[in-house]
Image (cartoon, rainbow, N blue to C red; front, top):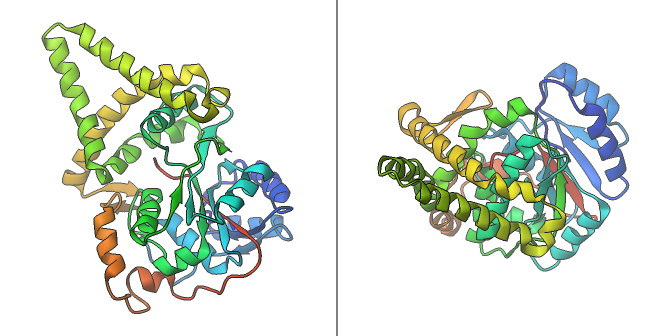
Length: 347
């Protein structure tokens, strides 16, 4: 199942070839929110490869990607479901491993890596390595137990950082998460224009992680203070520390065969970029009430685990309102597995 909302068909032939090969291993459902001419073309092209549907009309969430996931999960037949962005490229071995891990986990969090690697993909890979150095990255794909997803009532779709929202919702409901750092799944890099357009929006995600946001907000004042005091060695030490942390992430779980050494060298540049964009994100939060996303403005990056736990303890919301209402109509599980894919997420 592939939730989409495309405005052009760039890359359609490559995606179709991938789906055709993938259909030999899993059942695929396409949830397509594209304009009618594109939708109709997709329907003709993917006939026999996947079930092709529009997002359900009763889903009014602000984040269209979540609407696609909720629609797809209603149609999934297997207990083990893979949620993946449409730029994620699984091979049969990775799918089999996610399937096996879901026997004992509610959420599987693989590790994405870009291939091919233009300059901006190496730049953004530094983010991945820093996250690995501190714990684990936020991928564009998850394995989810469908029964757990149903028990949760889905997850809130009125947030920007929907991947973190899903992770925290699973945790809030007592689900078990596994983070196999050596489960590498390829991801196609975005175009250069899309890369630049995502900078502030991705920085806005850090509002859901206040400690992380505080660190990035402190970077520019610290750099300014070091320059004012004529202590460039302090800036150099910070750059070395960023490279060292990224290299720790690169060396974990066999990462040296996946990530190029140059990606670690981009770490200081990425930190400066995120530090700058964090101030822009903060301004957007308080001056504009959020960041623009798919024609709307989203205020909340993601809810805290504490708030989601309180919500999990509350009486279920009546059908037709709130998260439970958005998730009403789930079909009963059956079969062996399904794939849910969606447009690229902001990390």
